[in-house]
Every structure is written in structure tokens, then in C-alpha cells.
Image (cartoon, rainbow, N blue to C red):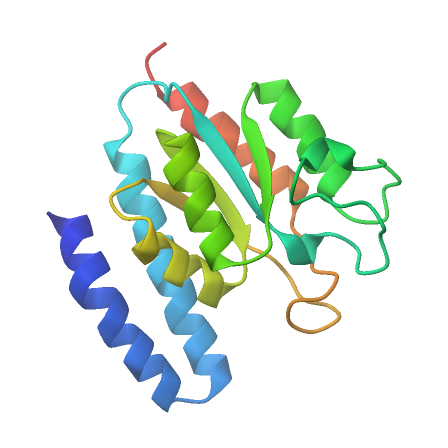
Length: 175
């Protein structure tokens, strides 16, 4: 019930407020929504998810990379210039599905096709908050990326954080 209220009332209200305020406040509001959602989702997990999707924003891929990852994340050359190769290794280590989405519509389609029990999504604050609402009632844990080159280009994620979140979710659950 809390999550439904958050998704249908809280997220839209905070989004409107975020659009009125300067960007630095907007990102803080969106980060708060993501953190609150993550706490709710983690508190509801009581058994190991049968299927877990690691959903990655395409902006994590180096802009100059010629490999197309939206069709198959395993097309990654593993050069190490972006985080994708490390994230693919993590997906293999934990036995989870990893997908790269080039936008919200593709992400939503992937979720509808794969129907995972849990989604670990990596994107910017705005994409995460919109995505969490768009795929409700699917459970999403969001991890924000960093944007050293600006929005939507050559973004990064703390790979260790992704691994910690997966360990936390999978170790807290009953086998």
C-alpha cells in the first residue's frame, strides 16, 4: 500500500515540485524518491527472486564504442574503457540477466518481455524515477550513475555498489 501511494501520489507530486525548483534541488528530490523506493522494496523481499534483471542505461557505454549493446550486452568487447564489461561479469557471477536499454520505452518493453521478479536498474535520477513508475507493479531497486561528461554521455556507475546491492538482496533472502 505504501509503495502504491508513493508511485501514484508521491512521485508525481515530487516531480512537479522538482520541475519548479532549480536542478540541484530536483536531483535531490529524485534521489530521495529512489532511496525511499529502494528501502520499501528491500524490506518486502522475503525469498530469493527467481529472476533478476540488471537493467543498464545505454549512456554507460562509451560514446565512441562501435559495439551495439542494446541487442546483446555480450557484444561488449571488454576493453575496460567503460563499466559495461565489469557489469557483464557481475551478471555472470550472480547468474542474472543483464540488458542495456537506449531509453524508457525500450526499458519498459524489456521488463514486460522478461517479467523479472526484481529489477536492479542503473540510470540517472530522472530516468530511474520515471522508470520505477512506468513499470509498476514490478519491483525496482535503483542505482544512480555519475555524469562526469554531462548528462547521457559516458556515464559511470560504482560497480562495487552494484555488487553490494546484489549480495545484500540475495544474501538476505531465504534460499
